[in-house]
Each structure stands twice: as structure tokens, then as C-alpha cells.
Length: 392
Ligand SMILES: Cc1cc2nc3c(=O)[nH]c(=O)nc-3n(C[C@H](O)[C@H](O)[C@H](O)COP(=O)(O)OP(=O)(O)OC[C@H]3O[C@@H](n4cnc5c(N)ncnc54)[C@H](O)[C@@H]3O)c2cc1C
Figure 1 (cartoon, rainbow, N blue to C red):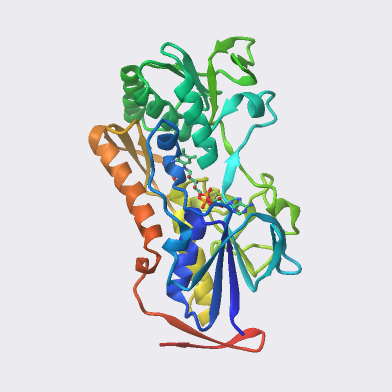
Figure 2: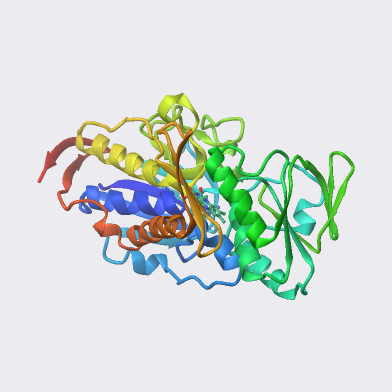
């Protein structure tokens, strides 16, 4: 009987995990199923590009994983039962021996009135295309307001301002915009906002959104013909509806090997996982986190199934890369605990580095069998449990 590994979600975390597992384990021993709602791999880190009018290549999951041993199932996950070890998909139930939960995240509206009815976002492909359609309707001089002060907000504002210089682009943020960056990066960012004509409303806590703008906590209104919500991300409620241990935000609590602290046959990777990194700080949601989580999670699963040493080094960071349109960017070098250092690369070089990272990540997903060297660990399964392991 083959050991059944089911990976839920084929974003960065799930797709990399599935590809790496296929490389690490022998297909005579394991059956790997990758479930995703969308038939394509979606490069989520480029959704601001899609939203502002650029076209992205289609990356069908069926083609990516053809011949790898990974079975792709296009279906929506509606529930997980970790006690019965099964997953409900639209119309069928899948059993598993090991589950990898990688369903990612979506926008957090913090129950602020008007967000659902009056805002656009870039959390996924459909949302980005909806934003794009609305952007195309705007006339010169009209205002697009981006709510949020984080990386996504900065990237969305810059991309739209570059693509549509005829529009007024503004950002409204509860605190500062990019204020966690090193001083040099902050100075550069302010200069870029000026060059792109982006107005920044800092310390503007948005409490209500209407069709014609937003209201802030101080009673001020910021008029806008279109509001884009980038104020935060949250996870889908599926994990929190199970008996899995989850954080107060619904992310699955995992150890350094990405294994659930409550259910040893469940792993979580990417935005859906709550793990501690270098220095004991929770890892932030990000592609920069999802990728090493996927490597470590896949390697840990393979190691446990093959009786190898399980990798458990905490995950650390190297940089934060911010695109400012297609020709400008900031690469902020950080410590492994994600603290900014004084090393900052800006301008065209910053844009090139960011592009290289995005393109190489997408390339590695599109070529799953190139991910790791070809030495495979062979798992021999007897009865219902992996009993004997050999390396070939
Ligand atoms: C515009 C934008 C720019 C970004 N830029 C950066 C950046 O520069 N650097 C960085 O580190 N991070 C960035 N991020 C964050 C990054 O994209 C996410 O952290 C990353 O995508 C998380 O990967 P994931 O695999 O956990 O989730 P996702 O990439 O969201 O993948 C989840 C997958 O699960 C599928 N799924 C969800 N629910 C279901 C269901 N019920 N049934 C079946 N399938 C389902 C989805 O279709 C998707 O394929 C950016 C995000 C956005 C939106």
C-alpha cells in the first residue's frame, strides 16, 4: 500500500512542497496528490502587475506536474477532518496518510464597513482582474486610493501610478508607510512617491469605506473614485474549523519541521502556517517565507518516511524586495530575524534583483523535477505503516 500524501493548495508553498516530495521520494512508495481550486499556478507576487494591465503567462498545473508522479486535482477544498484523516472536496472525499495544508491567505477586512462592497484588492487572480477592469473605467484626474502601509500597498500604488500617470494615486495608512525600513530606504521611498506623484496620508485609520472614498478615525474623509484594500491578509477559515491547534488568527501552529503541534500527520506551510523563525519571532506571511517553509516541510516529511535526520533549523530571512513599478525598486537587506540593516540597493538594480527573485521562483515551480539533485530515498511500506527504509 502506498503512503498517501495530499497537498492542499498549489501556490508557492504547496507547489514547491509537492515538487520536492516527488523528487525526494519514490513513486512506487508514495502517492502524491496536489489539490488546487485554480487550474493554473498563480504568481501571487505579480498580482499588482496583472491588476495594472500587464499580462502574465498561463502556467497550467497539469502541464507543470506532468510526468513527475504528482497527481493534480482541480477542486475546491470545503473541509478537512484531521481525526478521520480526510479532506472534503466539492463532490468527493479524499483520504490521506500525511496532509500538507497550504491554502494561503486572502484579504483581511477587520469587519470595517464598506470593505466588501466598495473596495478592490490584489489577493488573487480574479480580484486583480476585477481591479484592472475598474481601473480601465477611470478617467484622467480621478483618484485611486490604496489603503494600507505595507509592502503590498507600496507595490500596488507604484505599479498603478507608473501604468496610469493620468490618475491621482494616494495611499492611506494607519501608521507610517514603509516606516520599518532603514532610513536610507525610507528616504528613497519618499523620493519615489514624489516622482510618481503618489500622495501619502499617514496616521489615517480608515474606519468606513463608501463608493466615493473613505472615512478615517479622526472624522476626515479622503475622496476617491476607487479604493484598493491592501491593509492586511488573513487565512481561510478551514483550518480553524478542525481540531488542529491554530493561532488566534487561525493559522496552523507548527514546529520547526512545519509539522502541526497537535496532529503529527499534518504539516502546514506558507501563509496558512504559524511558525517561529530565527530569534523565536513568528514568521511573516510572504513568498520569502513560503518557499523555505516548503523546502523544509518537504524535506522533513521525506526524512521521516525514510528514517533520515529531520531538518529543523529555524527559518531566517535575507532581504525584503520591493518593486516600485517596472524600472525601480528597493532591496532592503535584513538580518535572519528580519531586522533591516543599513545595506540597501535601490533604483534599476533594485528592480532587477526583485525581478530575478520572482522569475527564478516561478521557474523553479514550473520545473519541479529540477528542484533537488536526483538521489532518491526509497521507502518500503509494509502494512499500514512505513516499516523499513533504504536508500538507493
Ligand atoms: C500583490 C502581492 C504582492 C506580493 N509581493 C510579495 C513579495 O514581494 N515578497 C513576498 O515575500 N511576498 C509577497 N506577497 C505575499 C505572497 O504572495 C504570499 O505570502 C504567498 O503567495 C503565500 O504563498 P502560499 O502558497 O502560502 O499561498 P498562495 O500563493 O495564496 O497559494 C494558495 C493556493 O491555495 C489555493 N486555494 C485557496 N483556497 C482553496 C480551497 N478552498 N480549495 C482549493 N484551493 C484553494 C489557491 O488557489 C492558491 O493556489 C505578495 C502578495 C500579493 C498579493
